[in-house]
Image (cartoon, rainbow, N blue to C red; front, side, top):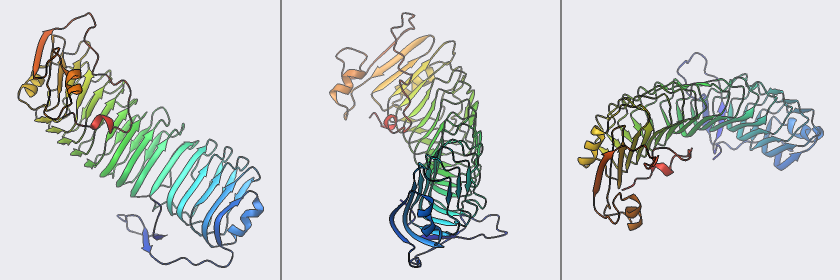
Length: 424
């Protein structure tokens, strides 16, 4: 959804605690004759002169094609509509130094030799999208964007992300920018999703002011700092990263799932205040992670628990309810015992159809047909042929490979929702 009301950005000097520096108005914009455009496409520099002649322009304008060396928009201050600069493959410069506001989307996409972008006065935009700009090294946002709904930066040559001063967003996505090795933002709230994935080999992400978000997707990062994050309505995922420590000191609630997957350097996880996970908990294929002690206050998991690794300790002392199944596999030389988790199962704290815990000594498992379970589900989960009621077994660990590696994720699903369903 783009901005429905017209947003006028203005600086508030001396207010260090100011939020998005903008004022909303329902006033209808006025433009002089010749400055209203309906799906206008400019394919040569001369076509843009009529747009640049307007301080206030209304409508949708697309700049497209190979006839531009410079895309010149000097003169336009306010643009009420969508402005798109697409496949201008011979344009090395986009010059819009007077542009302050774009009420809809400003998209600069697939301009392969673009190396200079001048958006010196731009502060307000609906969606700001930079995509497929391999030669672009700077955003050109001198004043800085202070009001927006979506920021999407993808496949650029940027070495750092500057000029993004928004405190509240719907979407913040920074992905596949090979030279960005640090992201430091004053974001306080993201209502849809944060996606920081596959930028430079080691990206340090600092969101010191972030307090709440919906989904947070972090892939191929080196560190993540969000000390003031207290809740997410959706999921959090750390995957395929070189991160060594995951520390979310003030996080209390995750609305959907928590996934920690394939982080080979990860040695420590710490969620000291986390009490509830609304969906699934998955911790898998983190080769150096030896402890599960990072969840001292976790009481409820609303979906399945699926964990594997060479753990030495960790008992989830406060856990009293798992709404789905529970699978834990202690691999290699890990010394973690299943005894505490067996007690969770025998106490009835695991509500799902399936329980399996395998340590270096024994494998414990049980499966049962719950009142709302289908017969097919009961049959597939049963450990005793033909059993439709609770059954359990404990046997010495075998070296024949007969035990299935059920703890490992076959594939990582970035949306998380699938693994978050409750197996009740």
